[in-house]
Length: 402
Image 1 (cartoon, one colour):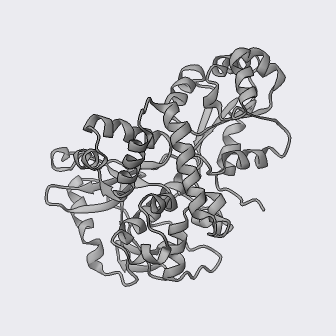
Image 2 (cartoon, rainbow, N blue to C red):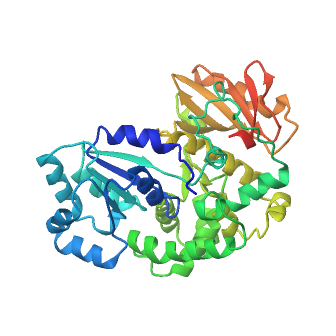
Image 3 (cartoon, rainbow, N blue to C red):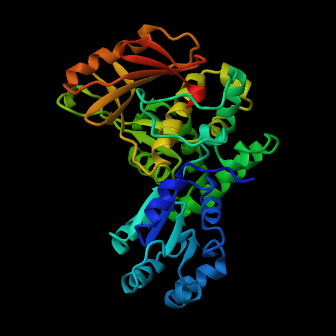
């Protein structure tokens, strides 16, 4: 049974304007399923995952596009970037909205080709794994503390059930099924990622060393990036660590949250925070074998924060928006987990793995006034069961409602 995606309205609206739509995202998040469902069988479908189709596209791109004429859905466009100039020519000859729908699992070289060939002709949107609200059969709006509302459906989730959700992750194949084959799914996912995407994105000679790097990065989810420590643990150089981290970013596996800059840049730590965008994959890579062990383990707080952060990022991307998100940390180690910049104001958010939030959980919000920006309603996202008020400037928002 198909699970409705929030991105539907935004994608359709963009497709009514742009002649080409490119849907990016990590492997196995449901890009093809989403677009095939959206097309309702009214456009031709062809995948470049098929070696024969790929060969035809590379050898005779003009003939390929005559065979698979618009309206068409071309899957895995990164395998035949030579098609892009010919798509541009077809669009320029007969510009109509929604002529080409493209998908791509990597953003590195593909995005460069798209920007060079299809500038002004393409709408680019990103699909992530299933959001918490999509799993509840609902859509979501971009998260903002002052406008956040509870889901219409009652959603009472126990702590064990919540960590089972965190442990499973958001890839549709595991999020919608049972957990019997979960470890096999992630093992296969990592192997495919290493053999196909990593090889395609860069010349990594030693895949086992890259896997060690991937695990070392996963162990740092929710933390500030220290390139020297990461390089040391993965047994690679600092330049290699930076290069390989950019591969994870281009593959849609991680998010690097930048610090907020204003007038006090010298007082802010400049390294980004690293978040794995799928906590199920992260749990597999860091060898948390069950949700119970994860909940009781040393990384429980980091996984809680990563899951909540990912849900907030999904709420923006699945509405066709770039997340206006940062974090704050100064030389006094005063930190705010998340700052959302919207409408000329900053909205602070703290993630706390507690069911009993206190006013102290939001105490660092006060230091933000030195940024000389309007400070909007803040939020403590935690395990409290209902939306409540912590103070006149801060709301309590249950993680289970994100």
